Length: 282
Image 1: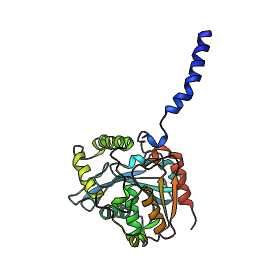
Image 2: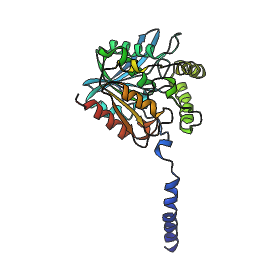
Image 3: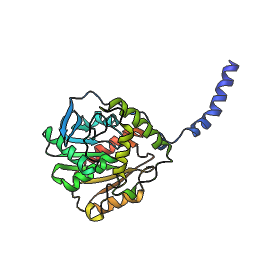
Image 4: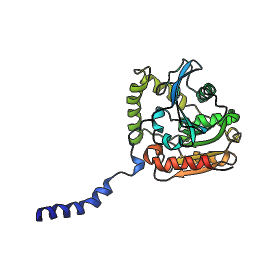
């Protein structure tokens, strides 16, 4: 009994120090979730590529667009909740996840056109767009150039030009994400050995795109929230605020204690914000 009490006392003394050593959640990269069972899935031939999609639930349509180097599985925490009241569509961007690519150089306008191709194939004239990182940039392109197809836009962790991106080379979380991206690419891609070339080619896009002016952003008239984590290691806060200030009527939301990977780090918080946005009356 005395021995047990000694162990318990030692644990109670050590517990606060152990808690202090735990990294804050914005410095973590929780596991990539799995998607729930889809109602339907398949590929759509668009612009010379085969673009993979899956659908869940029913109701007003919501399209979820993932970030660069990632895939639709990253939405695994959000889909079950959103599918209660919406037809949720996830799409693997060209060259990502289960989708193929063509010989055309990567570009956000091209990937936005891919999204429209999937929407056309599914008979969706208009949808709300929820995008993360590259997916948010694709959403901004759609809102800017195809406003008749976008009901509203939740743009998380986007940048409007290359100067809005930080140097992530020293970020341990981003380094871990890039390594995970390679493993997931090998597991999902129709071309599993092509990750190095894939990263080089999409990196060439990131160096030049997007490159929107304030006048370009001011053309966006669909209801928009510009959203980011308060500890985003990839996006400069000033660029986030510039977009929110420039897009007419846009809301600005900073999610607390999360980084570029908010949907993994605080999934309930992220999902609740998306639901609040989708239910917002304009």
